[in-house]
Length: 513
Image 1 (cartoon, helix red, strand yellow):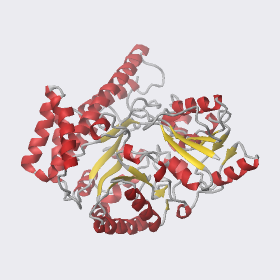
Image 2 (cartoon, helix red, strand yellow):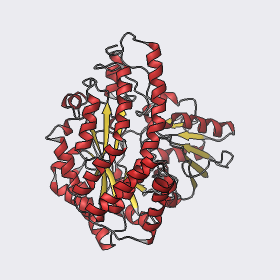
Image 3 (tube, rainbow, N blue to C red):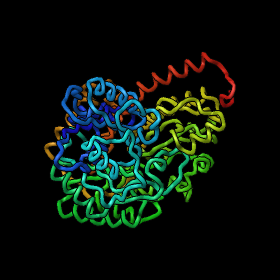
Image 4 (tube, rainbow, N blue to C red):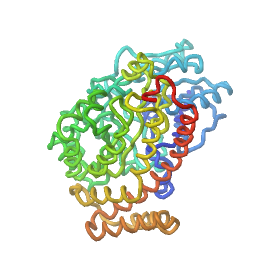
């Protein structure tokens, strides 16, 4: 059989870094790992074609016995369009992934077969059923799959040279119980991990295919800390033996700062960046959201501890908790500045389907609508400690201040000056010089005077104070361009939302309005 596996285009967000991609000569930051994983589960006698709309156009007239479509809630509109286009041409369409698992009721009847939850068990069963002509309209596994028997994803089917980084998965699930998080709904609270040898084979394969940066897409890489440490030791040895050809990034919880052995292993394995859900500097808001792992000590000190091991912290931050009032926006800005966090993915609280938060606010009559999956534009919750108008106005002010030239430059310089040494400092190469020219062209020669001044000042101060961090300063300069341009478009959407709220006036149940 010929099987076409389709990944929809990502909507613009903090994560897509659209303005950076032309500078670095890429089309997408990193691939969704879902379809390469499904391809890896598929018996070899079938022909598999992967199509990622982020790096290539979809040929809706392509011949295929089966078309598979995946995506998150944020992809729902595009997914439904893709499904309809293929079905209108008589293709047999199957759908899975996080959106299908969280909201199966929205997809029943719109596709031929629906996969709910993980597909290691159900995909091979479906293929046998399909060939026998006796498939079911919906497949759901009896239990969460054992990751140690999961086959290697088909990285070879990806157009890997079109992505900034490759993706690998070590574990699924997270042991914590954050009220707003849909991860524990989809993947559970018991972290399930691959064997160390499995992951190292994947690292070697990505390296063979030309990958030089890898994002481990785990929900919490240190959910099973003992096995994570074993893996890190092997990654460190592999990188050292191969002269550090790959740098790694991943997501962890803030309590990583409490384990110095773990931090040292992350450093030695050549991890450069950790995304950490910090959420709020306000203890009452953390307690409300059951984010207990962030309340075990001083958060500011924890972030700085991580940075001292040469690791950049990218923060996930949220405003709009029940214990947030109008003072939270300045508190958030102050924390990010003092924590020396250059990049903060700051959004408004969102009640995702099936989460404990969704259930609670629905019972309280404060659920405005179902989630769009985009917390950077919209909150579907009536806040308690302020009005919706206050929330949107405050959020708009906060994101503008976060990516103000001076605020960003100051905290970035502070990070670069205080960051610990890295495992692989690297050398300036011809490729680096080409990239520097592209950065200067976009952020100085073709930029307005304010951006040119910002870029040159960031670079010059870094050269004078810590020249070995110059490559990072260039990266942060172009990152700011991407962030600030996204902010401008986001602000226009927020302005429209604010204007509508102002026109509607105070309404019953709207926080303190």
